[in-house]
Structure formats: C-alpha cells, structure tokens
Length: 211
Image (cartoon, rainbow, N blue to C red; front, side, top):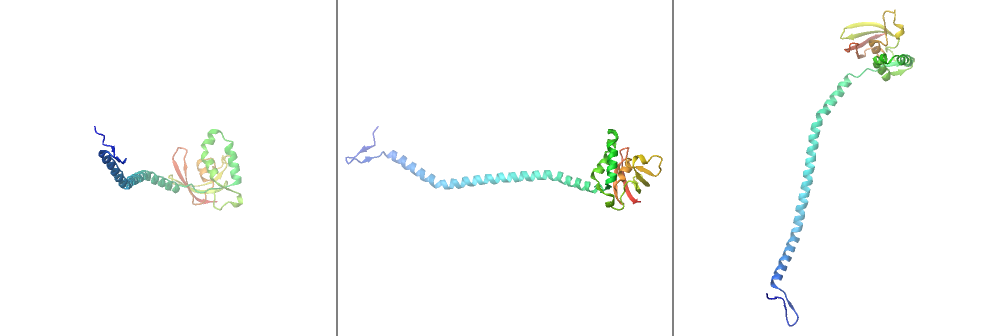
C-alpha cells in the first residue's frame, strides 16, 4: 500500500485524495444539513402544532360527547325541579302560643305516636311563627272554625280545630293530632295541601273559609 501522504522539499503536506473527497462529502453533508435544519425545524413545529391541535380537537369532542350524555339528566333534573315547584307546600303561620303548646304535646308522646305525627312536627319546623297580634287574617289557628273541602272524597266539612284533650264528647271538633287537623293548622283561605291518609292514600285539602 502506497502512502499517499508525502512531503515536498519545502515541507508542504500533500493530502490523500480519498481523504479529501471524504472531507468534501462530509462538509457538503454538513452544509446540506444546515440548509435543511430550518425546514426540518419548521416541519417539526408543524408536527407538534398539529399534534396539539389534534389533542385539543379530541378533548373538545370528548367534552361535547360528555355534554350530550349529561344533557338528558340535566333536563330531567330541571323537569323534576319544576314539578317539585308546582307541588310546593303552601306557607303556614302559627302563633308562638300554639307553637309552644303543640310542641310540648308532641314531646310528651311515645316514640310510636311521635313517629305517626312526624308530618305535623315537620310543618311546625317550617312554619312562620308569630305573636298572636302579628298573625295574618284568614289563617287557621287553634280554636278556628274551618270550612274546607277534601278531595277526591268530594267532602265539604266545617270543623273547629282544637287540642287533643278538647275533642272527646264535643261534636264538630277535630284534633290537631288527627291527619286532617294537622293539615289544617296554619293554612290560609284558598290554600291547598296534599296530606296522607291513614291508609296511605293521598288527599287534597282546600281551605274555603276560616271563622
């Protein structure tokens, strides 16, 4: 093998032609890579941007699909809320004297009787309690004579609302602890309320007149 690298008499170096060719190719490759770098960088940025946009599109599609899936329950919830509002309990007013006495009577009951009268206790909890002088007119209070209708029985009755110990032997009276009596307490003329009967059915009571 001949060494292609030799020295002139003046000390100059002669390079191997093959090595020079490889060097030129390498240099050309570097220049080409340098020219392609911005292009590849731009392509890389476009690829990354495309991937990001694709990810955003996928996420948006997923959120849209999830919204479509949850739209129906939301509308059902809105409908349920609207239906609940149509059956909203009427406002009731109770004097502080009646409130204290009825509450004391409930506290003295056995656990079984207290559970049976839980609806009355709930009514007292939501009642607007006022002094007797601040009570609105036309409201059923203890001792009121009330004319009311019961549906679907199509009954029109006039009874006086009294405490449990004031009913016995006195016709035309109804105890506040009776199902209908509990429903009457605190209602105003024209008010309607749904109330369970002892057999589990539902009755609607409408106040027509309070005396």
